[in-house]
Image (cartoon, rainbow, N blue to C red):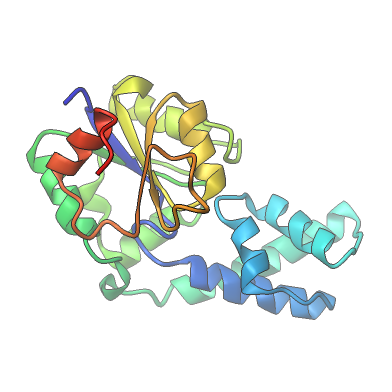
Length: 221
């Protein structure tokens, strides 16, 4: 394989923190007086905190001054941190560690590519930081997906070129960011939602080096 590195989004790929984002955003939306649904929440996947708040305000047709938006974003994050501070290793998604171990045993580098500034806390809580050679997150990049910055930074930290990278993403914005970076992308979730990815799987369970090589060659599994 020409692939030298695999970059993983965190939320929805390695761990299921999406439910905690949803709980915190729903709690905030209710406080503002906006009805926020799970379908609405799909629009927030892979999107930055402030952009997510803007989407919720748009849903409710609410306009707020920037100072109030910043306060609300902090409140939402405080609630989210409260939820994720109680995470355990049991919340690592099925197949994730098995696949990451296979990659590392084969000499393929691994990294996290996440917009979340809470990435270090989550990795520490679930105890998997040692499995990743680099962490590119909201603490080292400023541009939100679909901008490719987070993935390009990960490649730079790993010392590989974008064309040598595979990205694993569960959000449309993340898939687009991977493509914008010039990387191969495997979507985690629904083919209907992630149809721009090179290949889509329901999860990392059953993912292996053979499948990765087939996808790299553009062969449909």
